[in-house]
Image (cartoon, rainbow, N blue to C red; front, side, top):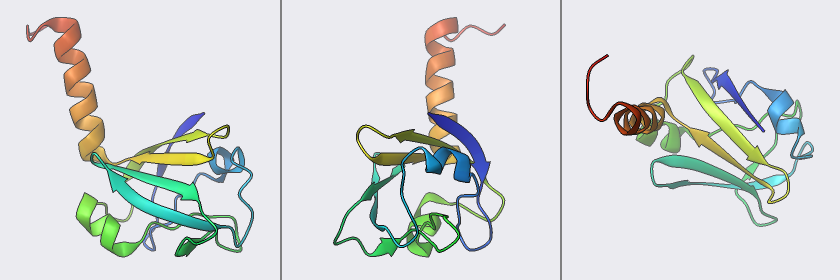
Length: 111
């Protein structure tokens, strides 16, 4: 399951519909990290982050800065309920992914 959503000024992922597929309740502890330019969030009893009382996931400020994320940026959020994780694709990662796909389709040729 996936969705495209914005981040607010505190780093909250604003699409609770996608997040609800994970079944993460208020107060659920999470680990948040980076892998290959993507942000990976997973349930973790020892995690330093938590789902907010309103059901939002907040990306830590240091991670947002590292990924160049700002208020209002739109991100692709992909969740896998079976594995219990969420992957956030920042704009730079989306651009690289789309560019690679288009190069593969068009072979580098202009339209």
